[in-house]
Length: 434
Image (cartoon, rainbow, N blue to C red):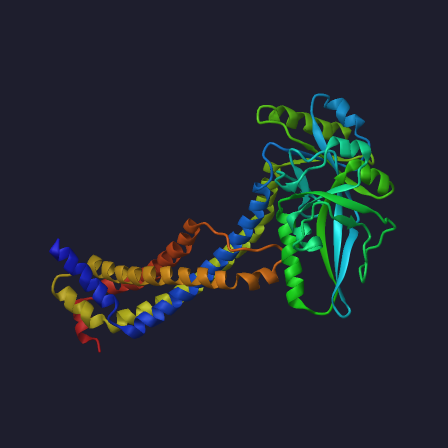
């Protein structure tokens, strides 16, 4: 045991003996692992943020999209299935405009959702006019009721971000939202002049967080141009049918079956879309599982491109590390000859060089990953300002082990060929070396 400890102590001492060699080797490993880790942190955070959006939606939920306004054909084919409808106006409606400074206005534009219910969940915009179902978490007030829909009550439910934006620190319940309010400097206009009473506030979704992030970016940019902020306002569907009768709407039918009924209803909706899509009518459906699968496919090419770039950087770094180790071997030929003269085998020499580079690479790789993570965290706000999504550092810790393992493996492989060269040096040749 003492011999083993002495042996490894000797290897550790020799690996740290030449400072110039260690610095050059460490720089090569650090650069490679730092770039690899930084790319991993940013890309994994980006992917995880996108997946979290979909993961936060309701399970066992089916969203059927139609450009056809009548729904009798749906109820005829699915007589025992209950659903909620969400009719979203194609054009956003101005609800507030205020001057931030001279010549610059902040215009708040609302996506008006006409709903038949919000008890089970509500729809929120994702991208390209796609809407995902989120659980409804009521913060204060109440939700839209069937009596509101029957009477066509001019009431609205908003999220926390919209409440802060329109009413700041005041209690929003009971306040009025003016449709087509202000319109100063905005490209959006409407002939509607109505008011909605806020009856409830729900928690923010991804869309609210994204709008908040975009608003903050625009305020920080401060380039003198007008700022448009998108919000969501939920009203009884009877209100949108009356006020916006001739406006184009996107129609979403959201089914909330339980886990037991989900497969059967999914099969029925699939059959409906296949049989009813014809001519000018289109029926499409989506589920949480489909969204996740589509996202994985869409991000696959990006992943491959980034991984290819990381491989190229690793190869370049590995070549430079190999050159430094060859220099180390040449420098230590007399030491190798003395060890062989005392009976060291070629395997012992190879093991020594590989172990030395393993120790150095492991220490440097861990350090590089830590530096990369904290640099990315420090620059999170700057990275966020460059991206169109609400970017946050979001990576599982075990993912950070990959750059450490990659950097260590790269260095060990780079040191293997010089190690073999050192192992094959003959004692007689080493004595003649100058």
